[in-house]
Length: 179
Image 1 (tube, rainbow, N blue to C red):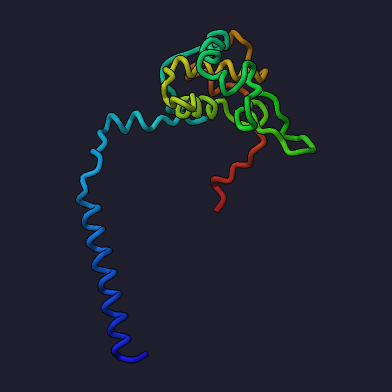
Image 2: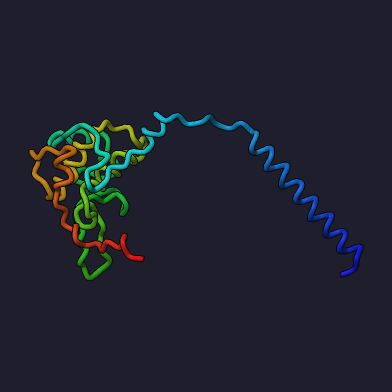
């Protein structure tokens, strides 16, 4: 490569770097958004773990949850959890079927806390985090009832939810300690 061509390439590269640094500097001083407060951050982190940590106050039964489900969940999940599309089915399924298994709350999820946590943070899909903690316990109880896992009178709360025995609890291998 000739010296004038090398020089042209160097000038071009320096120009690109200068534009990049100028853009970066402008992005850092654009003043978009506001800093999040500690109280807002606590509301964002709503994880309820299988060991019972992170569960809020509240309780509910399937009988109570049916009313909430009909008002807030039925449009997507159907009247009996049958779903309105493949991704909205809550009931049924068989992880040991010869065909592609249908993964539902009753056939796939290993912990009832997973259901509670998901409903609490992501449902209803058109208004996530809009259910009260009590409503989340109620809906969780109703979905577990629809799957035949608990009876309609069982009270779910922070102590009883972790004791729910899910059908696929042994269907996963804990590899967290594998190095």
